[in-house]
Image 1 (tube, rainbow, N blue to C red):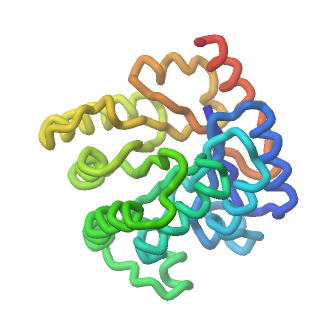
Image 2: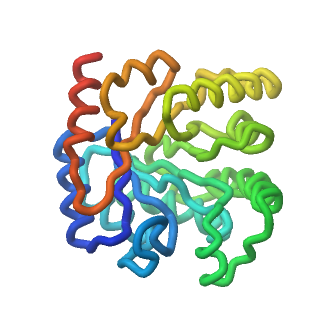
Length: 250
């Protein structure tokens, strides 16, 4: 069980306090998002860049796995992204995920000078870049020290879930359970089409704070990992309820 700490409307001090507390509580994972502006509320609120924050998170924590939920693929050269993740894997002692998605937040693209394109063009770029990431990871010296799963986030039935089946070690979508059930069935179908064992893909689901009770609803669907999303002030009580249920399930 894990949490995503939203880096908007906050301070670096508040973020560091939150991820230290989450790690001490026994969270399995701690995530940040990869955007350059707030996604909701005041569009001019304070905001911080995700991968830079991950460097401090890697140094400040000891137990939880870490990652972006998820990196906008268009924002960085894929070889560079692989090297960044590998370096942070060393800083964290082998606790990194490499989480990526096709990207969607147009303001990020417009204000930072990236070509927004179309959903189709961003997905085609992701498809082209995933093998480049794998190739660079295999060439880096030294390699990652942990397993560093490649996680793909998204719910696109025709392309994204195919890419998950073809390339990913882990996949993230959003609750509620009905949405997860539908998408998981489609992913299973894609796995059959590409001769992939669906059990090889870790399934993570982001949920809201009001959806932390009765995690068995998700476990029964084959979900491996629930991630509760929270913003400043960082109330970690929902995370604690997830951890308590995890421990009760053994």
